[in-house]
Length: 215
Image (cartoon, rainbow, N blue to C red):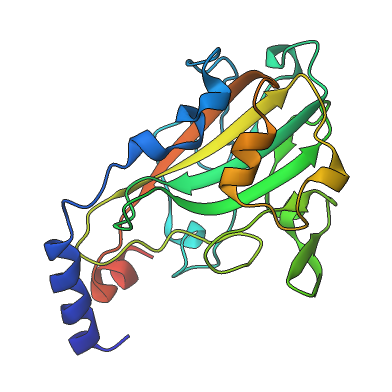
């Protein structure tokens, strides 16, 4: 991006700075979590560290867009869990709502990690992303498997939440869209949540010369 375009983006980012923190729209704030308001599944990343980590350049849109490797313990998953799902979102995007970066459904309950290999694209047919793990990929703004962090220049650090949800009942594949969006998933998991956990990281877009210096 040219320096002039960066200046324009920076000015817009500063003007929109107060448009952030749409925490009320986070996935775990939906009615499906009314009986489970607090996280009970600790999640960490062997690549990035514990929750609250700062994402490195390679995890951003400016780098390779690498998905953070996430891990959790089987003993922390409720014993009656039938299925897992994972949703990634940014509540600081200046959109008036939390911005979904990735949705992955129909994850078997014995799975204890999630990372780049799970979301490797096998093929895309009629707008449906098929990935190596065979999990169902939900909808985001770009209709891709995963949107890497790319906050506006000048908008400050953004938080990225990776929310793992344990379900006491399996979702019915035939009743879920081929590319389900966040609202559909929220409705589908009502009265099915057994527990959940969240791993959070931050990333801030900086001037390109600073980014190059830090690489």
